[in-house]
Image 1 (cartoon, rainbow, N blue to C red):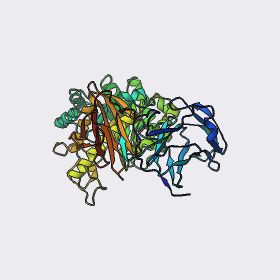
Image 2 (cartoon, helix red, strand yellow):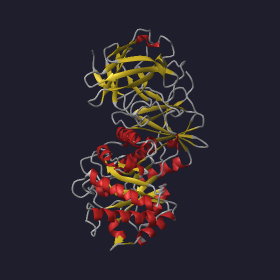
Image 3 (cartoon, rainbow, N blue to C red):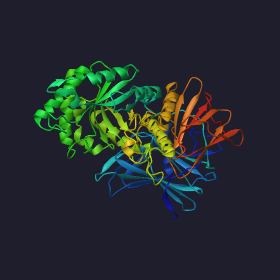
Image 4 (cartoon, rainbow, N blue to C red):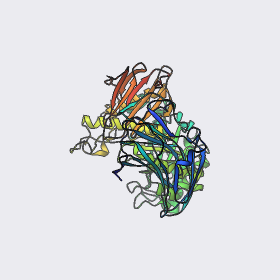
Length: 582
């Protein structure tokens, strides 16, 4: 056996579903013949039969697996396959979230690729069709799908797979708009609103900038200690702030948070202090009833910085349940979320939220803040979504109520400097990809953290999350978000294109005069060249709205190079553009 490796690159895998007559594409198996399963062998406790595929018929593997006894289904090549240069193999698969499925592809030289079929930005949900592709060196001779349980228990279920396909991989990505995946939920096509976190109750110029950028609402602490004085609730400062925000056509996400010196200090824990917090929550809901507001009960209760002492899910559950019930009594239509947990902490959430708690909530909130790029949150989002659906059905929303990137980025060079032009441009790149990820995954809303830098120290990451500097001047990230919001506003979001090469993503937006596709890569190891029909392309710009260089290709095509560090590319196509059938 030759070299085995994880598949990290792919050559040509078009974003379009190729016609079967294409000279660049060969379907090894689409399971549309009665004898389609004759080439497959099974190892382990499983059986296979014809079933429903991604497009038409497919194969259905019924399995029973444990940690000690995985299942393997194998296709051993015997038919005459066409010779492709740098062949790319792809497959569609669908399976539950309690197993890990790995694609194993081997070519005639013994070269083997091992590729876990995981949640992606295009296909993030468990039990939906997922697309996997990888590049080989020579003629493919063996394909296998291995199934292993993720836990220590024995599980049984069904793995569906379809469309084993070979394509020519010549290093180019032939690119054109295509129909979005049929798996894209209808709700995703209505873009969720994007808000921005603010810290100042009086900052009119910054609110003007937020509105001009296209933010739909702001997120602001509604501090208990400022609202209640000796048992009386006073909202004047927050009322003035809300009027200022509403005058700009925006709403507010209020965070009911932090302790009160008259009621236990940092965190209310005694029955009396918890009842006091309930009265505060009820007063808030009653006061702002009927206005354009949402609520989040506490901020990062799993973080000792915001939950004094040691975060305790039982303590927070008590506070959350009491406050939510009190708010519902004052305003049954209130839009209420649990407090955003730091780093998408599903373990903490699962210990806080039961069915009774979820009955009084509109949403649960998370604060992703991944160490890597925005796209790395997909697996965590998929886990939370699956858990939420099991606990509460499909009625509960998932909010990204806080997430951002500092312009002090330690991975770009040795000296931390949030005022450095290069790092600020990097922040703008990540900001664009963050919003696209929120839209692509189908969060019900997203919040960028935050609007204005909180200090002037260029080496302090916490002081450099803003879209504006401390003087209110725009940083590149503000310009990038405004460009994205403006581009999306006049177009309809059609979802993520379903069959991208590894590490590449493309979101499609249809307008009255064009089809806009925003393309980017999250893979820093190499650049990718897109080849486009010259007659179809109207314009090409970067994420800041600047025109980018388009090179001439062969046979009436144009070529554009994309890279992770250069960020998303905006491609405007004539309506109805398609690659010709070869």
